[in-house]
Length: 360
Image 1: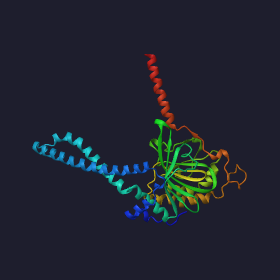
Image 2: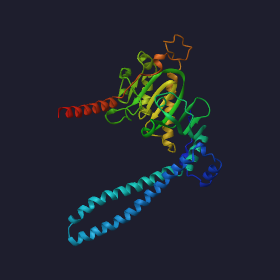
Image 3: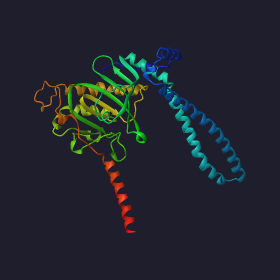
Image 4: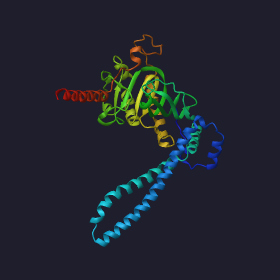
């Protein structure tokens, strides 16, 4: 675990000459394709265009407002100007907002190579390895079992000690017109012992009406209610007949740490890994994001390690065997409720149309 973190690479001003030298020594683009670099440059160019658009539109609108003001003074009434104001005010607001977003994006991100330089320097200063793009993804779990064309971007990994890594996981589902790209924040911490498959579905990142943001839905019969207000923050799923094992791992002090430090994120325990997921990618040039993730690894991860260090699946019958019985290795999934409701509504609509045509 990392205890003392040096954030200066993410905070201090960047020397353009240092970035230039850094770029010249890495002609391989860190494994990024030219297309990825071009895409990042397009984002920067789009920010500049947004600011330019806001300035031009704002100048034109100022002239229009001046003309409206002169007309209103001549008529000694604002009534003739009201229709024009109803149209122009939203346009002006949109232009100002576009300019604000453009400036904010450029100031936060800088050029792609500046971001790479900052993140790589942060990794070097803190005994981490950095890779802007890595297509070697070997994890199991709910995000990995449903995905195609997998990669981790802005990947940070520990270079010594226990395996810890975090970054942004990108994968695709479907094909053709139904092909969709998904982006998640990911953190993975290796545990000493294999544990039953357990998922903490965070309620803070659910969709409208409490629909889970996770790509898989689990059978409700596997929900385990814990004590205190933990159930207000997470829904815990564990395999049936492994409820006592879950209580062995998720003690009150570990639950408190999860609420305090990981409540915005979903958590999965699978095989011998503790995985943390965010439906939104991590901004890994932001020192606050690193601080939060490393804090989760240091506090939540350390407690989970201590709590599970002596765990053994009683179904195996031998505590020396670091395995989980088949019935505890994976949670049972089901069709998400909202998918069922949509299908039911569509079937009802088709049936109503058919019945109407039949009767008429």
